[in-house]
Length: 544
Image (cartoon, rainbow, N blue to C red; front, side, top):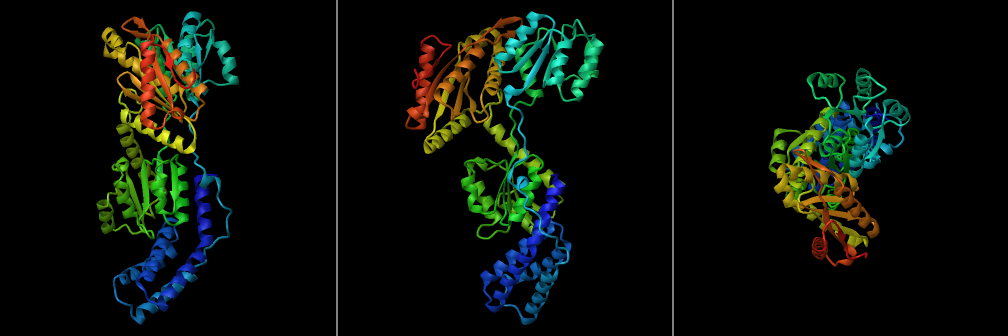
């Protein structure tokens, strides 16, 4: 179902429910007329205001015109004494017009289930599912590149000629091709022509060539290839480019927390945002917000301004008192976008007020731009600038949070402390550029090897922390040892010199600790033991 069809279906559902909604408002008005009380007047005003917002959103101009007049008169009565008989008769007439305005109702539509309940965001493939082809007629060169990429966890297949590659490509297309330009069965022109077609069909092509002259690079540019590497291609740079072009950074969808006391508004705006790839958690009860934040960390908040019990400004102030969200963007929805309201929401710590009658495309644009800013703010504050992994503070927060959840759920979490062996010697011998290259390669290896549910961070210098929840201890130990072995086989090149680096690690499981700090100390103790007993090993105390 397209977005337009989904929104139209929501509109039909709203129109079908609208007569009952109007009758409820009329019933409240009749009760108020019999017993004029301020709290009842506030309830009528709130329902009329909500009706104004939803009629604006769904483009019901006739209904909105009537509701505009009702809202204005009711608003003037909020802080005034009991109304005159003439004023009540005038309101009676408007409520009667509202009730009679039924000529455009459509029959009931089936409930939209998938569109409302599911997030259409489709994450990228799992890292090991990306397939890379190396077409290189020198068997030694091709085998070396294949082995190095395998150490990073890539699914790689080596071909000695283009003909054999084509047969496999047609049956099961690769995601990325490393293409040597000197092959026995195809000319350079034919290879460039093929590369151009692959790129048009979203298969990335990296050229591997012994030539670095201007003419050859120009041919590659005209064939629209993604990258050009001069042999011998440096593995760490190659891996970084593969991550970039295949978008393997596991960039999550932007997350929005939406609160509106009208379910129809929650459904409408959630559907609109989800159709553009955002992850939306919508709710009608403001008191659900704080408990939700433990599991759902939004990049942006959207609050309805007028809600019973707790309004949008109060909710915004509450969010601003949480250290984690002091800079997170907050948008307020209202059908009343007067300058006075805009000033009020800014004073409450919100970023802007958006009218409920804002065009869908403009609404989405505003939300995405601000949500991206919120994501960037959170990311810059939580990520290590070199490796892109969680920084010291945030990996500790993640570890503590996972252990607390595991204790409540009676499950297990592993804390792994990993340290690169003799890293000072790497910096002394190959300079900080060589050291940074090693750190980046290790970060890529971790991202390639671990699950989306796992956490990885740079604890400090050459020390890293992994948080691995809900995995049996033997599998965790095997996984971390596999990372250690793969890293020890990576060949680094700095100014023509080749070298390798190993790592040591200590593991601790939440099931053998009473609290987080004890788990952290045990992992550190085991890391120290791994260093003391010879390095390039993983020590744990749970499984011998």
